[in-house]
Image 1 (tube, rainbow, N blue to C red):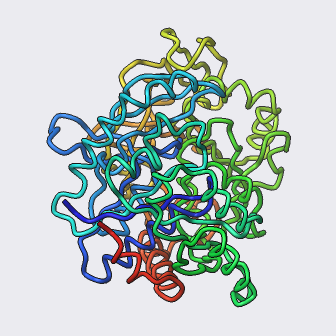
Image 2: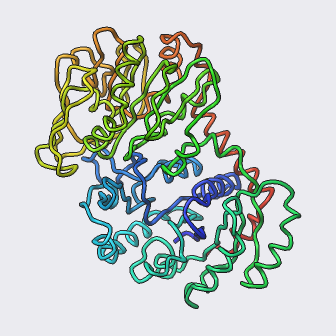
Image 3: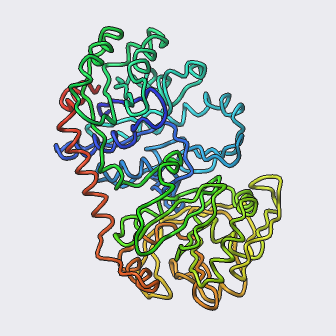
Length: 491
């Protein structure tokens, strides 16, 4: 079995995902065979990964974070890197993915009772993910200080104690109160859990780190834990795909550029990292529009992203008045792209006769494409190679969706996926829908698409940019963390 070390945070969004990705790249740069692991993740940003030994399945779902961390390791992603994925569908209900496949749905209270059964799957994947590896770097979820959830925990100390994995605690100084959050975690943990922690690090520091020397002394006084270092604000992290929708609050506006792309922030927005390659373009401004705000009138392109709850988000789309903004955008000659759930919303109707998404089983679409969608129980999950029909250029991406879409506009497909027509295009060519995520990651296609909007694009190797960002994060961690000590404590 490979050695392992785990990063847990004093709270959510303290930067664990990027730190694990960076440490994975550090280990890889040192010649180690390294793998990521996250027992439980909650995100509607999913990726398609291999299901080892299942040759008849197109693929399984894992969090985008573990997909990114696999890239940092230089290996193909596997469903065993994230055995439990929770995809929120409503305020109280979640779809549960286990080892890549839909396990069922659960309300928040029901899920707490379900966790004990899921630990078996977590430990099964744990036994598989480290085969052939030297090191596994594990990412926790939320915080070990949520002691009210400890009895059935599978994500933090519940896993660490069962698998005997030492823990490095991560504190986020940017949000304030970092001394209290680290010392408070020490205070309320049980003695068994406290023994698992081998030290801590401070993340997202801005300015002169020597100004925090007294803070480090205070933490040592309260906890006795060693500090592995203070990590500065990692600018390179902004060039990495975002995993969690909490970051959308920080993406609400961009820098004014030649082309403004407006993206409505749907309540159950999914896979919004589809927009990252456009954000990387020097002449493109991507604006995420929060509920209550109008879609900007000066946008040249509106992208309706994926959704975990198409009908629910479609109803909210109308409540926000975005349907009127979108109609005005079209009247001005603006372009629209709908991806997955966003594609479904662009049609005449969306029907869910089996109530898969909830109690509302029929909704009027936005009417920009002459299509209709019927939700079906079978989910399509697969990585794909495709070809853009309007530009005759290669595409690569993935599909994660429910539903079958038909109608007159599908005679103008947007892509050919594995020999099958996908999507639809309006008669004037300005409204495009597709089930394929990741299409903007194809550099040649992105360049030609932007050119069709009157913008000079392309020239950027987006995947290479992600690799460079991972290298930059790794270099910062080498400079500011005692990586030797962290790796040496793995067991």
